[in-house]
Length: 259
Length: 261
Ligand SMILES: Nc1ncnc2c1ncn2[C@@H]1O[C@H](COP(=O)(O)OP(=O)(O)OP(=O)(O)O)[C@@H](O)[C@H]1O
Ligand SMILES: [Mg+2]
Image (cartoon, rainbow over all chains, first blue to last red; front, side):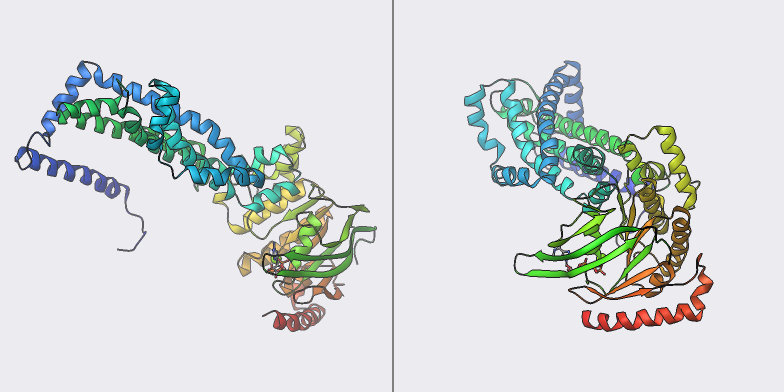
């Protein structure tokens, strides 16, 4: 076996499927074999039943929609600011000098630590929840976009100068298209992180959303519901990941040979 | 000697010292030379002697510490489309097809699509890339990428073409073929070319004039005229006059290379 050597596509997806099957088998063994009490670990069957119930009474879809709205809003607001600012920081040293030290500092303050302040400032409504997700996403995002832009080869910019590009056209025709693949990838990764801030955002003062549903179920010992909600978050995250990968492959087909 | 139609480029007392954090690096001592219109001039020198620095100063990408560069009698300030550049590293825009890469400068100038197309087609055929118009750089070989880079610079119709070891990253065989393609292109376009290399045979084969540089901090050590007839063919590389010139340059540069290591 040679390291990094490619393997066939079917073997690759087979390995992934095997992991899911293995985990499922262990779970079934522990739950059906009564090795772990039912109050701590629900059986797959019970989780499936709970899922069907929650779909039928509409609560799962409602929670999922509310959560998706919050995550997407926080993420989009963050991206709208982070992408242009990151590009600017990666190209113009003035912007870099002004923003980077502060962002590097704030980045290490956990978003969850700001929740009490956000509640004081914004109340318990949607703005506060979106703010938590924004806060958790923005600083990483802007620094990653900056890094992508910084890595655009200087010679690409220089050659554009010798072809007559100047001012805005250098951004427009070189820096942005050269950074775009990295930016889309950054958006994909940070969208995943935005989901992880959801539960934190919905712990306090929420009356809907998957994070709220998890906390609520825990209070009443409904482990089945907790499982359904966690699996739903995972599924939604995976779907957004696939969407981003699809967009990436369509937009940046020029990076593959034979096109 | 070809040209003689007048002086295209004047480099007057240009020198460069890079100010580092710890110490300053004197890359280039005061250097002066001229390039005639339509002339093929090569700067030949050992590694690190400041060849790229000269070219980058002419391109306007690096500011000289002192001295000035005149193109058609006007002092250059910063980079511009009148001085096309081909780098050693591959600098094609990966998100553009061969054609759009070549049309990059024309698009910036707002040349109408039909005219752009005619110009890019001409250069695509000149560098022998017919059939690759819609290919993306990722699927081109190194030699093809450099041919596109040359076509892209020429399509912009610069006053002078600056080439910094454009074949340095290519294998020996491809390199020889690229030299012949470049000569063909040059004979057709009659552009003034300022070329940088550390390959002696390349310098003799391509140039009208070769400036041999000293080791860092570089300056021109000697200027050698290459009065071989044109058009040149690879068979000429075995002729006595070619070998004599090659030996002469080798002797000059060997002494400097020994100092540079
Ligand atoms: N931006 C810079 N800052 C500091 N020193 C530099 C810089 N650019 C070049 N130098 C130094 O100046 C000297 C000349 O560099 P230059 O790139 O012009 O040499 P060269 O003749 O093109 O070499 P090579 O054959 O390696 O391409 C080198 O010693 C190099 O390390
Ligand atoms: Mg160099």
